[in-house]
Image 1: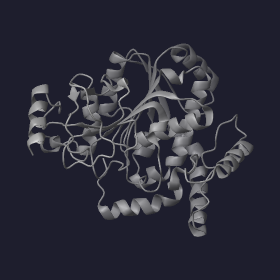
Image 2 (image 1 turned 180 degrees about the horizontal axis):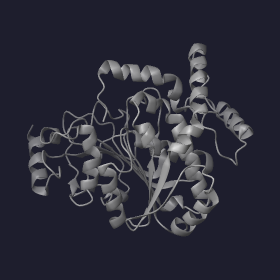
Image 3 (image 1 turned 45 degrees about the vertical axis):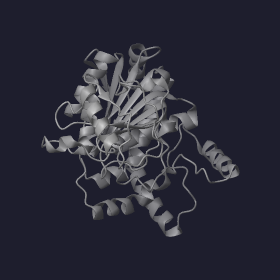
Length: 380
């Protein structure tokens, strides 16, 4: 996905500082007094003129230096002015039983007709799922179509692919700079869909890389400001460049259960704070399969492994690799514990889960291979 050197990663962080610093557009620092939180929540409510839809630009940390704040305001104005243009370029594509039901653009003129159709087809007790792709990708990217097929077979209901291809095709810096406005557009549209019949407790969200950051942010906003809690969220190798150290994202607050799959050191977030932190391959940093195929890096392999886990078991190791750093390793993992959409994560297990992967497709270890692996770890 990202081919960035260390110097470029630093440049990404510096250029994105003003636009996404502190995830501050809707989150509050834990170390600030409650009076500060109450004051700014009141400001949000007082400034809210759009049917209780939160303006994600309305709250910023006040601790930024004045020069940085001024630059942030200038960047925010530029990005905010482009909102109508970005809005027109985004599509929500609705699938059911393998067919496209309809496509809609956020805020389109035929909104009531779309919402009525949506409520009839996907509302009430109907299961729904949102898919958010990464940089340089779209709803026609091969893993997206494969995931839609798997979800159609194993989950059913309505599957909604959110396509922001026009912006995902631009340089990564441009895409990250517009994270605030893109996430606001998507949040407003999903909030409207929920208010017109979609049940968040029947909802599942999936995001890969940049799409993982989007899904997490939307889920946290819906929960924090409106009390709408997404039932389940699975995120693969959430993007780190342009986000890490510039924001504090409490991903575990985005849904009732948030499972995050980590597979790369250079492109993934370094903050592991999901309900289940699933560390693929070597500590979640590298994958053996990069040596056996020329197509995907460790980063790109995460979503392919997630899709393969629908049909092949990916077993967790009961032994923590000695060279891996873990802040919260799960002890006494049950024998044969599997990860993935159809895995055993509904058992209330939380913490770091180590899942060794293999050199060749489908990149999992059999039970026999896993025992050999664990025996090797115990003897080393």
